[in-house]
Length: 100
Image (cartoon, rainbow, N blue to C red; front, side, top):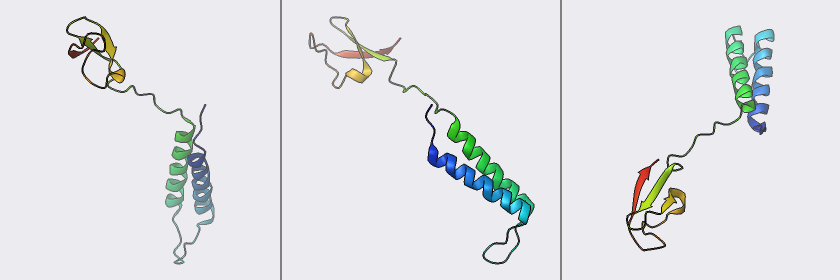
């Protein structure tokens, strides 16, 4: 399992700072007290960031993965990721795209 360590560390730091703001009503640099709600929000954002770092990335298939090209002359099939020009390498016929 691959973990995004930077996001996990940032999430932990946000959780700690949100907890500190909630418990101690932390003062900002401008000597304005923070509300407990702000500490809750920052802590929840840190929790969301931390959990998203632990989840595996989604494996979305690319649109062209399933696409195949067929030669109009010899009926050979080629995957789209292997086709650079639309000419059959065997018979120099035209490749026509279709999906299976």
